[in-house]
Amino acid sequence: MQKYICHDCQKTLVKNEEYMPYKSGSETFIKCKQCHKENSALKNFQPTEVYSRVVGYIRPVQQWNKGKQEEFKDRAEYVVKQPACC
Ligand SMILES: [Zn+2]
Image 1 (tube, rainbow, N blue to C red):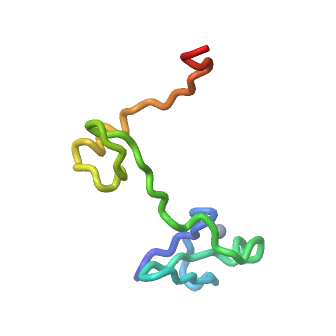
Image 2: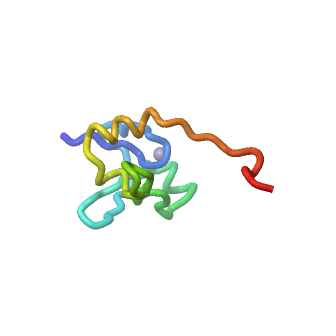
């Protein structure tokens, strides 16, 4: 039997528990009864395409090779507090 996990609360649904399926293309998302009661709309289910710089080009990270994707995970984000000029 397929394991059902609620999209919103990540709870694993037990056997015979009520749930609401949402179809999006070939994917199906599941919401438990309580989460569906709180908010019946399915949100934040589409993957985000992240672009970043690799070997001088801005390319979607998903299209990078495996080695560069692993390197991307090690990158640190930072905020520049003061502009470099002026
Ligand atoms: Zn839930």
